[in-house]
Length: 495
Image (cartoon, rainbow, N blue to C red; front, top):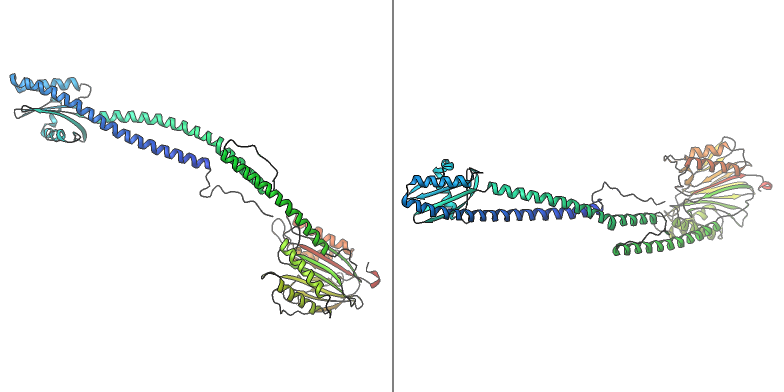
């Protein structure tokens, strides 16, 4: 029986469509937001620097006008007090953030709060004043410089960008927090939408396909709101209907094949001098086992048990082929057992596909002489009980059928006495498996056959079947099973 393999969620690439979509959407959205924030940050920084420069330049122009006036009527001390006062008013909230530098009459004046920067600040801010971005670095702090030079007076006003950048970062972090909240909300909405539009419908479709896989074809499901999924739903339903039709056709064909095979097997055949009981259980609807009892024109009987490799329809076709070959051969004289098996082997080997073969136990029973001759083409060794405890094996005497067209076989003959019994079987008996995987084995089969030595042959065979069924438990047959039990009787007591 075909076992449906369950998906292994631990395998790579086994994430759900919902997970993959959410990852894709959120990752794309996250990258887009980061790029947008980076661009926005650069733009804000550039804009803030430009704005600062313009403000500082305007301030430098205003200071230049005042310094120009003071330079005409006052000394440098008055100019120093002026720029100190301006610096105090402007940067009262940030004493270290605002600088004023004035160069007048070859003398450099700094706002007193930044006198410590005097040794090199003029050089730095002078270079920054003419730089494209009007920026420089002092003591690891970025500054922007606005300047105005006229009438021999140079005024430089600089300010740190740290506060501006900190304000921008705070603003951007606020924006990022808002976007994160919006992104989480969007992810929740997307998740809900995917659940409703994709995930749940797909689960319904998967469930439907799983039902089809175990043969539940006639079920239906509610339609979907999505056109693509609705089309997939109709395709699955169409497939289900087709599979149901094909399965019905297959069952009908198998039932016909089963009836044909049953028709090919003997039914209520009375063989002189033998009481016979048999059991035939296919592992599938039809079997590759074949047994038969065929009368010959010289008064003898052929007793045949064959097992074609495999089971199911291919094996059943091989079994039907064997019956047809055997019937054809038994119409040709002489009726010598070795000659019959050799002809069957040649014709079977020429007919079957390469690699296919069969085992066969073929016996010839001559009631008038009480002789039992057999040729075994690789078949399971038969069991002969001559009395309550003595066992003799009816062993193989040649190769399997279909391996070598020129194979040679040996014949063995014994004379049987009344009440002696023979058990023939296919390998489905000894290879019957328990639920734990234990073989039934030949010894159990022999012991059961010996234990019911005194019972009627039909009852003894039923007990063997019962023990095989008990050993197998609820497990299915792993191979076709055929048993033939024979008890030899007086010629007037064969019924």
